[in-house]
Amino acid sequence: LAAGVLSTNVTVTPLGTNLGSDQVNVSLGLLTNASYLVGALSNATVVIKDRPLNIWYRANPGIGNDFVDFDGDGLPNLLEYALGRSPSSPDPNPLNVSVTNGHLQIVFTTSKATDVLSALAWSPDLSNWSSGISYFERIDTLFGDDFATNTYRTTGLISSTNMVFVRLQAT
Image 1 (spheres, rainbow, N blue to C red):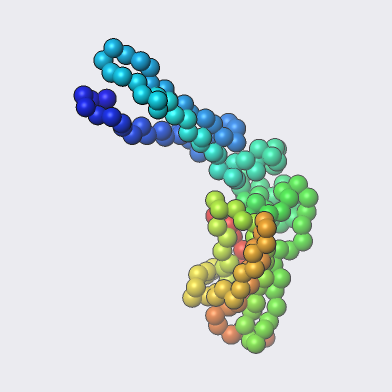
Image 2 (image 1 turned 30 degrees about the horizontal axis):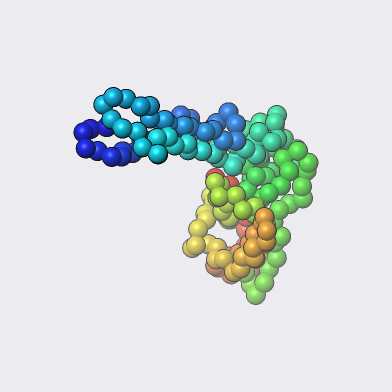
C-alpha cells in the first residue's frame, strides 16, 4: 500500500469455468512489517462457488456433456438440468401441449436453476425455427419450492390446416 493509504481492493479472478469442487476458498493475509502497522482486519477470505450446473455434473458423474442424452429419453443433459429432471432415468415428454381458444398452449416445469435459460421455439417445417415474444406469450408462472410451472401460448392462432412444431431449448 502506498503511504497514507488505509485500504485497497484486491481482485480475485477464477481461472476457467469449472472448479475442481463445489467451492474454493481464497484467503489473503497481510503480514506485519516495519514499514506499516497491521490493524485488526489483517486478513480476509472469499468463497468462490462453482456454477450450479457444474455441481450438478459432479453429482451425476459419467453422463457426458450438455448435448448428450445419457438416459435416451430425447432430452439432452442441459435440458434435463434446466427442467430439474434426472439425467440417468428416462422421463416422459416435458411439454403438455393443448389448443385453447385457437392458440397452441404449452405448459412445462423448470427447475429454479439461475445459470441456464429455457426458451420455446416453433417451426412450420422443422427447418426454420422462431422464438421470442413475437411467437409466444407467457400466460402464467406458478412457483413452488424448487420448481416453476410455466404456461405459454402462441401469439398467433393455429388451425387444423397449418401444422406447427414446438421445441424447448436450454442455453
